[in-house]
Length: 358
Image 1: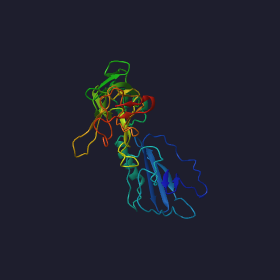
Image 2: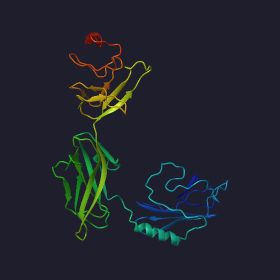
Image 3: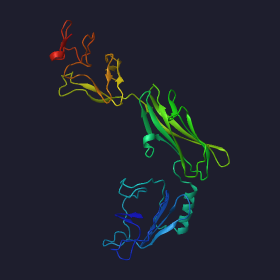
Image 4: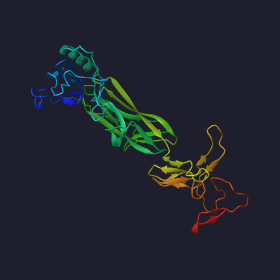
């Protein structure tokens, strides 16, 4: 099939109203070589398995016939994009690897196309031999795993035998950052060995429990597969996946000022706990300073403060003037401003039955 302006064309019948083409071949190749060759009043399509074999002629005949005669000759404005349907959409499936175009007036021979196919086959296109992904989404790896400090996630290493011959003693493992740990699920082993031979095209996979360290990290963890080939020689391959180790506490929302710049208390920072566990934020500090200047104010979150799973914590209570909540008996209050205050003034906190003085 070729995309020719507003039509996906597999061939042309003598009648412009007859679009039925029962003899078009059905292909099941994992990797495809496709050729579309055109010249005035004539076009040809050829296709083949990009991993082996020769090209087949899919259609060889006249251009599409329509009332406006817009397909013969073709009127091309702008550039031709390889890898999509020409409308810049991403609605198709599959992966475009490489392509080439010839200049006008150089309609290639079938023999030339077949030589190109020989080069494509020699490139040995194949499925990915080794993959590393979260265990619950191995079919669509995200390319990044995010951990919170000292948390664990299941990660799967999958080896596909693309060597063309059976291999044996396949061993899978994961190398993790310093301070992290990786063991095979439901065991204490750092690697998984398969003693039975793995046939061509077959897969072997192992799931590991990866536990992050206590320090922040942004980098890679590496999956590895090693095996013995048909001659008994050791072979190996690695694959890296991006990982990061970050606090689950996020700045979810903030406001610098509200409707009036004179109201300096109408500002806040909202923290969010993205994890499924309560997080202790005791003695965390908020600092305020211009980028070019040193820190001149620091606000400490009271001891014993925890943010519930999927919960929020608000810094800068705009309806009270406090930066952080205050409990009865607190010796220090953090307020947005001391404008209008004097030594010895009494401050009322909260209202109703929970009202208190400081």
